[in-house]
Length: 123
Ligand code: HEM
Image (cartoon, rainbow, N blue to C red; front, top):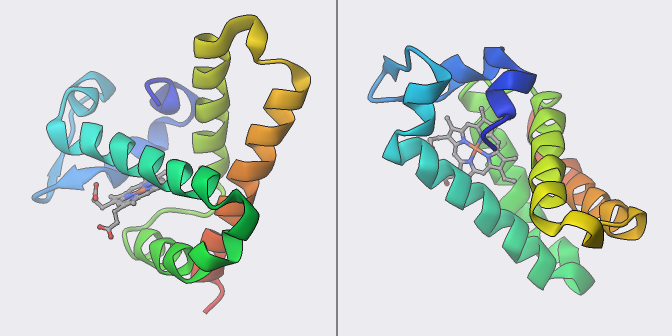
Protein backbone atom coordinates (compact mmCIF):
# COMPACT_ATOMS: atom_id res chain seq x y z
CA UNK A 1 0.00 0.00 0.00
CA UNK A 2 2.92 2.37 0.61
CA UNK A 3 3.36 2.79 -3.15
CA UNK A 4 -0.26 3.74 -3.63
CA UNK A 5 0.42 7.48 -3.66
CA UNK A 6 3.37 7.08 -6.05
CA UNK A 7 1.00 5.32 -8.45
CA UNK A 8 -1.77 7.89 -8.01
CA UNK A 9 -1.12 11.02 -5.91
CA UNK A 10 -4.77 12.08 -6.46
CA UNK A 11 -5.86 9.41 -3.96
CA UNK A 12 -4.27 11.30 -1.06
CA UNK A 13 -7.07 13.89 -0.60
CA UNK A 14 -9.65 11.09 -0.41
CA UNK A 15 -8.20 9.94 2.90
CA UNK A 16 -9.47 12.58 5.30
CA UNK A 17 -10.14 12.05 8.95
CA UNK A 18 -12.06 14.66 10.95
CA UNK A 19 -12.17 16.74 7.76
CA UNK A 20 -8.38 17.17 7.93
CA UNK A 21 -6.40 16.70 4.75
CA UNK A 22 -2.91 15.20 4.90
CA UNK A 23 -0.11 17.53 3.79
CA UNK A 24 2.00 14.70 2.34
CA UNK A 25 1.91 10.95 1.64
CA UNK A 26 4.39 10.50 4.52
CA UNK A 27 1.98 12.18 6.95
CA UNK A 28 -0.87 9.96 5.72
CA UNK A 29 1.26 6.80 5.92
CA UNK A 30 2.03 7.43 9.58
CA UNK A 31 -1.57 8.25 10.58
CA UNK A 32 -3.23 5.53 12.71
CA UNK A 33 -6.51 5.97 10.77
CA UNK A 34 -4.79 5.26 7.46
CA UNK A 35 -2.94 2.26 8.90
CA UNK A 36 -6.34 1.06 10.13
CA UNK A 37 -7.67 1.41 6.58
CA UNK A 38 -4.85 -0.83 5.31
CA UNK A 39 -5.92 -3.41 7.92
CA UNK A 40 -9.53 -3.03 6.77
CA UNK A 41 -8.53 -3.67 3.15
CA UNK A 42 -6.55 -6.75 4.16
CA UNK A 43 -9.47 -8.05 6.28
CA UNK A 44 -11.71 -7.87 3.21
CA UNK A 45 -9.08 -9.70 1.13
CA UNK A 46 -8.74 -12.27 3.93
CA UNK A 47 -12.52 -12.78 4.01
CA UNK A 48 -12.52 -13.31 0.23
CA UNK A 49 -9.70 -15.89 0.52
CA UNK A 50 -11.63 -17.70 3.26
CA UNK A 51 -14.83 -17.68 1.18
CA UNK A 52 -13.12 -18.55 -2.09
CA UNK A 53 -15.58 -21.37 -2.76
CA UNK A 54 -18.54 -19.22 -1.84
CA UNK A 55 -17.81 -15.63 -2.90
CA UNK A 56 -21.52 -14.81 -3.53
CA UNK A 57 -22.02 -14.81 0.25
CA UNK A 58 -19.87 -11.64 0.36
CA UNK A 59 -21.74 -9.91 -2.48
CA UNK A 60 -24.11 -7.83 -0.40
CA UNK A 61 -21.34 -6.74 1.97
CA UNK A 62 -19.10 -5.78 -0.97
CA UNK A 63 -21.93 -3.95 -2.72
CA UNK A 64 -22.48 -1.83 0.41
CA UNK A 65 -18.74 -1.32 0.76
CA UNK A 66 -18.66 -0.07 -2.83
CA UNK A 67 -21.50 2.35 -2.06
CA UNK A 68 -19.59 3.70 0.95
CA UNK A 69 -16.55 4.32 -1.25
CA UNK A 70 -18.66 6.01 -3.89
CA UNK A 71 -20.04 8.29 -1.18
CA UNK A 72 -16.57 9.40 -0.09
CA UNK A 73 -15.62 10.24 -3.70
CA UNK A 74 -13.60 7.19 -4.70
CA UNK A 75 -13.65 6.44 -8.44
CA UNK A 76 -14.08 2.77 -9.27
CA UNK A 77 -10.96 2.90 -11.51
CA UNK A 78 -8.88 3.71 -8.43
CA UNK A 79 -9.38 0.17 -7.20
CA UNK A 80 -7.03 -0.95 -10.01
CA UNK A 81 -4.30 1.18 -8.44
CA UNK A 82 -4.89 -0.52 -5.09
CA UNK A 83 -4.73 -3.87 -6.94
CA UNK A 84 -1.37 -2.98 -8.48
CA UNK A 85 -0.11 -1.93 -5.10
CA UNK A 86 -1.31 -5.23 -3.58
CA UNK A 87 0.44 -7.29 -6.27
CA UNK A 88 3.63 -5.26 -5.82
CA UNK A 89 3.55 -5.92 -2.06
CA UNK A 90 2.95 -9.67 -2.59
CA UNK A 91 5.77 -9.87 -5.12
CA UNK A 92 8.14 -8.19 -2.68
CA UNK A 93 7.11 -10.44 0.22
CA UNK A 94 6.96 -13.74 -1.67
CA UNK A 95 9.97 -13.31 -3.95
CA UNK A 96 10.41 -16.25 -6.31
CA UNK A 97 7.32 -17.98 -4.85
CA UNK A 98 5.31 -15.27 -6.62
CA UNK A 99 5.26 -17.26 -9.85
CA UNK A 100 2.88 -16.46 -12.76
CA UNK A 101 0.21 -18.89 -11.45
CA UNK A 102 0.25 -17.26 -8.02
CA UNK A 103 0.05 -13.79 -9.62
CA UNK A 104 -2.91 -14.93 -11.72
CA UNK A 105 -4.70 -16.40 -8.69
CA UNK A 106 -4.32 -13.17 -6.65
CA UNK A 107 -5.34 -11.06 -9.65
CA UNK A 108 -8.50 -13.15 -10.10
CA UNK A 109 -9.36 -12.91 -6.42
CA UNK A 110 -8.86 -9.15 -6.25
CA UNK A 111 -10.82 -8.66 -9.51
CA UNK A 112 -13.72 -10.65 -8.06
CA UNK A 113 -13.76 -8.40 -4.97
CA UNK A 114 -13.68 -5.23 -7.11
CA UNK A 115 -16.36 -6.61 -9.45
CA UNK A 116 -18.72 -7.02 -6.49
CA UNK A 117 -17.81 -3.58 -5.05
CA UNK A 118 -18.34 -1.79 -8.36
CA UNK A 119 -22.09 -2.59 -8.27
CA UNK A 120 -22.17 0.15 -5.64
CA UNK A 121 -21.63 2.63 -8.50
CA UNK A 122 -24.42 1.18 -10.67
CA UNK A 123 -27.38 2.44 -8.66
C1 HEM B 1 -13.41 2.75 4.47
C2 HEM B 1 -11.01 5.29 1.10
C3 HEM B 1 -9.97 1.18 -1.25
C4 HEM B 1 -12.01 -1.36 2.34
C5 HEM B 1 -12.86 3.78 3.74
C6 HEM B 1 -12.97 5.19 4.10
C7 HEM B 1 -12.28 5.89 3.16
C8 HEM B 1 -11.76 4.95 2.21
C9 HEM B 1 -12.06 7.42 3.10
C10 HEM B 1 -13.70 5.73 5.33
C11 HEM B 1 -12.72 5.99 6.45
C12 HEM B 1 -12.01 4.75 6.96
O1 HEM B 1 -12.69 3.80 7.44
O2 HEM B 1 -10.77 4.72 6.87
C13 HEM B 1 -10.53 4.40 0.18
C14 HEM B 1 -9.79 4.78 -1.01
C15 HEM B 1 -9.48 3.64 -1.67
C16 HEM B 1 -10.05 2.52 -0.90
C17 HEM B 1 -9.42 6.21 -1.42
C18 HEM B 1 -8.70 3.51 -2.94
C19 HEM B 1 -9.23 3.36 -4.07
C20 HEM B 1 -10.47 0.13 -0.50
C21 HEM B 1 -10.42 -1.25 -0.89
C22 HEM B 1 -11.00 -1.97 0.12
C23 HEM B 1 -11.41 -1.02 1.14
C24 HEM B 1 -9.82 -1.78 -2.20
C25 HEM B 1 -11.21 -3.45 0.26
C26 HEM B 1 -11.00 -4.33 -0.70
C27 HEM B 1 -12.55 -0.47 3.24
C28 HEM B 1 -13.29 -0.86 4.43
C29 HEM B 1 -13.72 0.33 5.02
C30 HEM B 1 -13.21 1.42 4.21
C31 HEM B 1 -13.57 -2.29 4.91
C32 HEM B 1 -14.57 0.47 6.29
C33 HEM B 1 -16.03 0.57 5.87
C34 HEM B 1 -16.96 0.72 7.05
O3 HEM B 1 -16.67 1.49 7.96
O4 HEM B 1 -18.02 0.06 7.04
N1 HEM B 1 -12.14 3.65 2.58
N2 HEM B 1 -10.65 3.03 0.21
N3 HEM B 1 -11.08 0.24 0.74
N4 HEM B 1 -12.51 0.89 3.15
FE1 HEM B 1 -11.58 1.96 1.68
